[in-house]
Length: 306
Image (cartoon, rainbow, N blue to C red):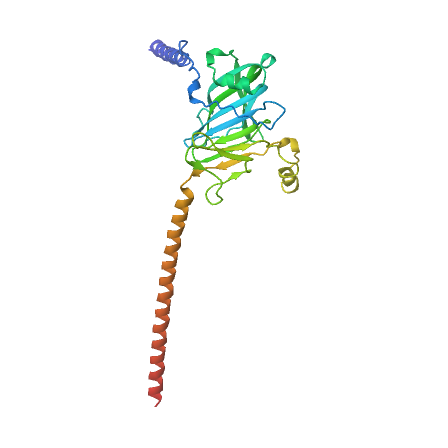
């Protein structure tokens, strides 16, 4: 009897171990999804007033469905640092996906407008393949993601960035770059009562698709703003290097939102006036009724005394 029990226990333990090993197997024929270049707009933005040459440019094509397409045009870079906003409602959502690289080695690629124009019309098969790795770290309580390339490159790097759903977006720069926000079609920002942007962009314009575009040319933080507050009020020992760039915070909204807000406010104001008028009218009637009652009461007292 004991032998049978031992045998059953042994078989059960063996089955558990085998099932565990099977669950840990990874299918070897599973293919990694190829990057999809067609999802990105590779518009080359160039500042003609800058006589230094082509500079790093970061463009965010915002959407209101919890995503943004990001296009970096980088010069002589081996790493891209991303400081994402974590979606608390979807903590397991992949932050960066569909990475596309259209670039050349920095040693033999001239950082010119013509070079980026050529790369923007290229296909993935037309350019060298650059291997990359992704890792992350937490600095001062904020997650940082690093896309590291196997060598320094000059060209275009695009990816899809998961963002919290809604019409609020925040970008924390980590390197020198011209930054552009392309708002969804039919959306705008800047109304202090509906949604505004901080800091104010250096330039605003509308592209060929009638989308509003915001541009910042220099986001380096000025000494003595946040750092002084941290030193004086928070009693934190920080340096200007800890906060070298100003973050961009934007709340975008549909162009009809201010008009709808005005209509709603007008209706609410009219309702308040009606209620207030009714209250004052009722109060007046009650006062008059009370005065009539008091006059009648006084007359009764006088008549009784007579």
